[in-house]
Image (cartoon, rainbow, N blue to C red):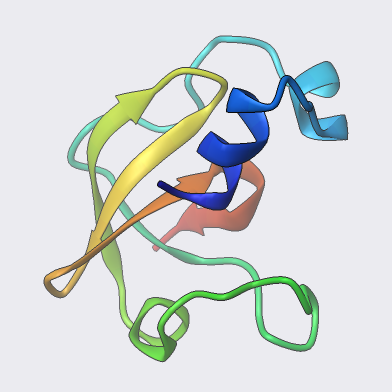
Length: 85
C-alpha cells in the first residue's frame, strides 16, 4: 500500500486533493520523468531509479494519480510529481 493509499484509507486528504480536478493531466503511454528530487521533497521515499530514469504512464488512477513504469520499477505518483519527458 502506498503512502497516499494509506492516507486515503484513514480519510486524510492533501492540498492537492483540494486543488486538482479529476481531469487527467497525462494519458496512458505518455513519457514522463519525476519532477521532484530528494532535496525538493524530503518525504519522497522513491527508489533512486525513479528520480533518474524516464518513465511511462501505464494506468490512470483516481485523484490525479498515475501508475508509472520507470524501467521496470512501477510507482504510483501524483500529477504534480511528474512532467512530460
